[in-house]
Structures are given as C-alpha cells and as structure tokens.
Image 1 (tube, chains in turn purple, green):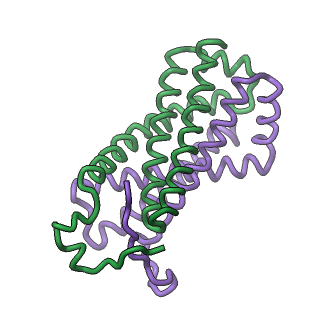
Image 2 (spheres, chains in turn brown, red; image 1 turned 90 degrees about the vertical axis):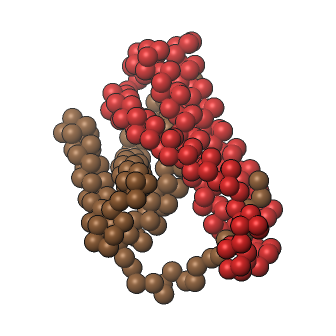
Length: 128
Length: 130
C-alpha cells in the first residue's frame, strides 16, 4: 500500500503548549516506547524457554538498578498508553471533546497513569 | 521526501481518493479492537510478571506451563504485535513517503513479526515442551 507524503508541521516550538497537545505527543512517544519495550518481554520469555543459565543472565540485567529503572519507565509507558487509549474510546462516542472537558480528561490521563504506576510498584515491588 | 504536492483541492475532492477508504477503515477498527484486547493483555502481563519477575525457570514453567495461562498469554502477545505494527504505521506515514516509507514499513513488519514469533513461540514452547 502506497502512502502520500503528509504535510509536516512547522517547528514544534512555535506552538503554545496545551495539555491535550502534550498528551497527544506523549501517547505517540509511549507507543514507541512500548514498541521497543515489548522486545524486553520477548527476550525474557525466550531466555526462560532456552534454559536456566539464559534466564539467570536476563534476570541479573533486569534486576540491576538500570534494569529496574527501565522497567519502571516501561510500566508507566504501558499504563499511560492504556489510559490514553481509553480516552480515545471515550472520544469515539463523540463526547468529552469540548474545551475544559478535554483538558480535564487529559490531566486525568496523566494523573491516573502516574497513580496506577506508583500503586503497582509500591504494592508489588517496594513493599513486596 | 515529498513526491507530490498536496493542495487543498486534492484533499477536498473525493475523486482523488486521497487516502485508502477500505484500508484506513480496517486500520481504525483493527487498532480499536486490538487496543481493547490489550487491556486484558496488560492485566495478564501484570499477573505473570508479578509472579515470575526474578524467579527461576521451574517457577516460570510452573505458571506459564499451565495451558490456561500460557495459551492466552501467547495469543495476547501476538495481538499486541498487531497493535504495534498498526500503531507504528501511523507514525511512519506521518514522516515518510515513497521508498523510504516502504523500507521502514518492512522493518516494522519484521520487528513485530519477531516479537510475536519469539515471544508467543517461547511461551508455547514452555506450554508444550516445558
């Protein structure tokens, strides 16, 4: 399937930032992050399928401080992209599009993603 | 990167068939459907990772080896890969066109295929062969 060249935006810096614009960009950014992050899941599963030695190596890397940092970011990225997706499902019913409503929902997306991520890590990692 | 100049008339005139009606609708529906299913994927992923993070192979086989955990997990990984490919297509369409787009799309397909085959394949290997 061929595609036509899309009109590209002038430089990003000319726009006054709005929360909906930021969430739109973050939705795409987290989507790309999840895209790469899925490789981490595949690597872990493949290592588990291969054998204990491979799994030990992957567990060592993922368990290191840097690995944990990446996995924390991946968690937030997944949760935020899911919240952003839910926001799109709401918009599919042509509601919550008015000024004020859409901004509230954008802030709610961010708030929910941060809260859910911290909840997951607090309950299952830091307190476990 | 731009091959043809796009004017307002091109976009406004239905006869130019700006965009592919069938493929675009399918793209939209696929993305919504797989996106909704991905909520189930994330819940199962959370369950699996919480149970198995840092654990040994015997624990992994003990949980994922159950067909009622392993089979849905493998299927959901494959569905997530479809969502990944579709979503990345949106991004590539926005910035690339022509041969560069086709090359990027090929790499996109290969990456998503690799994630699906390796991820789901590894789980299915654990399910059927331990």
